[in-house]
Image (cartoon, rainbow, N blue to C red; front, side):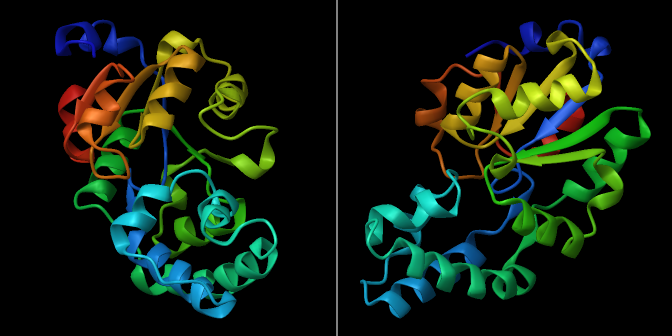
Length: 222
């Protein structure tokens, strides 16, 4: 893991900040857990604990469900999950404390802000609109709009190309080991916040530029 002085070097050149969604700026875990167990109940599979579900989050909803129901019942489980999730997201999701103020601060200082999420596009936008985040983000790109989701770097690289900035002028902020991997492979400075699915120990092994305990600490760096 890089040191703080190394990370802070040339921060004045940063133009684009890309955020993961779940576990990074939005706490949607209660909604995910509720929808997951609804899908388990509808397909006749055992309900799972919150920690077990949380650990499986981050790879998109198909990859979330398949290990628990197999390919045979995936379509049925996915239909039940998505039907429930479009309602549970509106009731059980919230921003992590201080997130809105941080996004406003960054936007007002002239940074371009974007979202790179493995969550399907329609549910990402459901969250963004519900939590009134649209004014802060110039671009939102999800894994179902590219060939490969994270940890493949394609999601991040496509966003970077859209803004026509050098990778050295980009920060990516996520919460999982796959975010650290994606950021490293995309060649951008990567910050991991420990409010998501991966433990600090797991994240540290992926050597991100910096690990922080909550998203608000990003303000101190910029």
